[in-house]
Length: 287
Image (cartoon, rainbow, N blue to C red; front, top):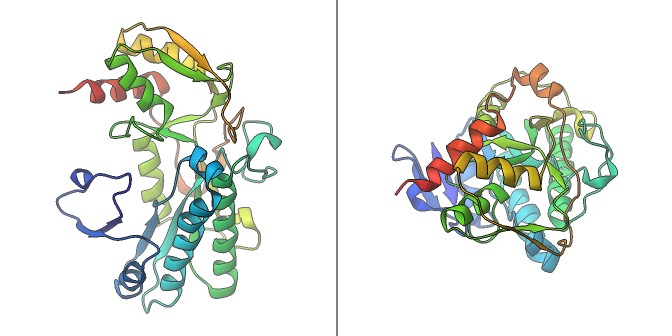
């Protein structure tokens, strides 16, 4: 197993000891050579610029990493003597936007609210093109809001990680907007299991964009305020909740259907929100 990361947000300490680590930017020629000559069976595309606010402030930087970087590796995979299956980490919230009524199936209208969502959707179109035109074996997993241990609570991170750190610091929880916006929170081990299944599952042919796009989520919508209350119960800590103005590019309501994942991958979420929040907080609490 080879792991490629530029460590702009990741940590070297998180790389398993059994893996070979390459400190590379996915836009680099070196990363392309690695994919082209590596004889890999699977290529998991998790590298991305994931900050919605940064994508709004600097859409060019977002597109450079998320679109150009991915194309660099797709071209390498296309020309590889031994082609890998490409498992792309997409987004099940940002792609659908508020044009779709949750829970959204894969065929829902797609109208992203942010350049981040636009870049992810753009890559999905490229993946469908590479599959139809070049016969590349591709699949897009449209994640709900992923949370769990090891998530960075600083900078752009999931709200669960940020709230966990604030609870540990006995600081108020900041809620943007009115707190009624909803998300589909899916535990990281469930998402990892979906990736493993997608690497070997028998997949349908590709005629349309959504043929090989699969939602990975619980289908359950939870408001930010309810999340804050549930996490405080799990942590047995109470702090004030402060409100801040709504952020540009933020979707208001999101949850995704997962019937297709069950049918094609044999996947279903196993970790309920209360259990996942407890495990996540206890991980942050460890010395």
